[in-house]
Amino acid sequence: MKLNNINSIEQYLAIAARYGGKECLTNDYLQKETQSLIDNGQLSVFEHGTNVFFFVKRDVGLRVYYYLNDLNDFPKFDIQEDLIIEILFRGDHGLPQEVIDYFLGCGFSKHLQRDQYSAIYKNITLSKQDIEGLSIYIAKTKDEVAYAIDLFNKTFDNYTGNYIPESECDKLFSEKCILIARFNDRLAGAMHFRREGKLIWAEHNVVEPWCRGKHIGSELCNAFIEEAKVDDNTRIRDRLQGCMKRWALYM
Image (tube, rainbow, N blue to C red):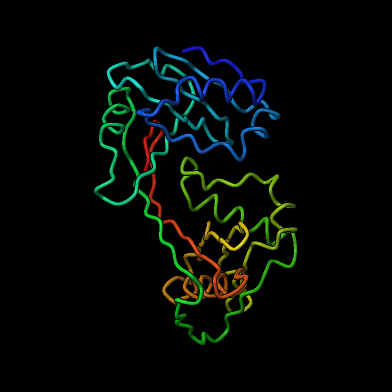
C-alpha cells in the first residue's frame, strides 16, 4: 500500500467528491481541520478500486478515514504503523455492522466502544459534596498543566485520541481549560475540557490512585460544568471510553 500526500484542499475535495456518492459509506468528518492537516503534511490518501482511504498522521499512529462503495474489495493494509479507525453510529439500531465486518475482513480488530452523553445546563441538577481538604481551580501555572498532561497520558490509552503532546502545554494554559484538584494540599487529579461556542466537551478526568473513592472525580465534573458554561442553554457532552490494541477498529 503506497500512500500519496495531499498537497492542496482542492485535491482533497476532488477526491472526496469522486468517491462520495449517495450510497457511499464514510466517516470523513475532517472538513474543519483539513487545511491545517495539509499545511502540516499530515494528510495522505490511498485509492483502491471504488474505495478511497485518507490517512492522518497523529502523535500516535495513523487515523484512517474512508469512503466505501464496494464492500467486497479488500485492500492490504501493509503499513508499518499503528492504524486506527473510528466508526460513528447512533444507538444500537444504528450500528453499521457491514462496515465493521468489512474492516474486520481487512485485518483490523474491534477493541473499543465509546458512548456519548449530552445535556443542557438548565436541565442538570448538580449533586455537590463538601469534601474537607479539597480545592478545585483552573490551572494557575504551566507546571500544573504539564502535570495534568502527564497524568492523562499515563492513564488513558494513546490510540483512542486521548494522547496530548507536551507541545500543547502553552495552548492549554492560555485557553484556561485545565482544572486542577488538590486534596490536603497534594495534587490529586485534573480535568481537561474543550469549548466550541455554547458546546463544551469533557475530554479527560483523572484522579490519582491514592485518593480515589472520595468523590473527587465527581467534584471535578461539577466544577467543569460551572466553569465552562456560557449560559443556561450551554450544551455539555461527554464520552466514555475504554482501551484498544495496536491494530484497532473502535467505535
